[in-house]
Image (cartoon, rainbow, N blue to C red; front, side, top):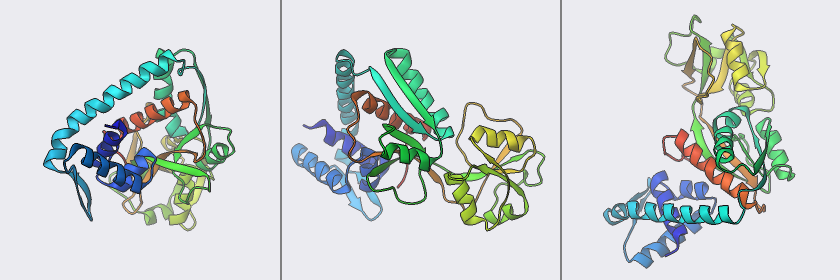
Length: 299
C-alpha cells in the first residue's frame, strides 16, 4: 500500500474537504480524489462519504484512521533516519517571511533544527509579502512564509495555506473603545490609525475598507505596531496572532465585518527544493498545525 494515499485520506478527513486537502498536500483536487479511490479499492472498503458539505469518514474509515496515522508516522521516522544518515541535514536554506511569521513559525522551526542538526545553516529575510514572493519567484529564496496577498499568485508561484487568523484592532485599555466586544470598519474612520507599512496585506486591507484612514504610523513589524498603540499613537489594525512578546495594557477587538487573513507557504511551481529545504517545509507545516490547534486552515 502506498503510504502517500494514507496521507491524502488523513488530510481529507482532518480538513473536511478534498479541496482543502489538496491545498494542504500541494497537489490537485482530482489527484486527491483518485488516490483515495485507489486506496478504497486496495483495501476493499469505502472510506469516505462525499456530499455538498464536504467529506467525512465512514464507520470503516473511522476505524482505520489510527492505524493509518501510525503507518504515516512510521514512514516519517524511516525517512528522517535515512535523511540524517545521508547528510540531508546539511547546507543552507533560504527562507522569506513577514515579521509575524518569522517570530511565530520560522524561528521555532529553525531553533528546533539547529538544536539537533548543527550543520544546517539558514538565511531568513523579512519583508512585505509581495517582496518575499518576488524574491521567491526570482530564485533568491527557497520559499516564503507570508500573509497571503489579496490578489492571485503570479504565474509560476504556488501558495499553500497554513493558518487563518481574524482581523481586528489593538487599543489601549483606557481607550473609549476598549469596553466594546467588537468594532466595525466604519468605527475606524474617526480615529488615528497605526498600520503596517505600504505593500503589506494589512495596509491594503485597511485601505480597501476605509476610504480615507487617518494613518499616523506605518510600522515595519507587528511588535512595533503594538508598541506604538501602547504609547497612545492610535488604533492598531492587525490580525490576532499570539506572539512571544506581546505588549501589556492592550485590548484586541475583532473587526466584525473583516475577513480573516491567511498565512501561507509560497514557492515556485517548478522548483526542486533541496532535501534540507523539504525538511524545513514539513516542519513549518507541522508548526502551523500546532498554532491552529491541529486543524488545517479552511479554503
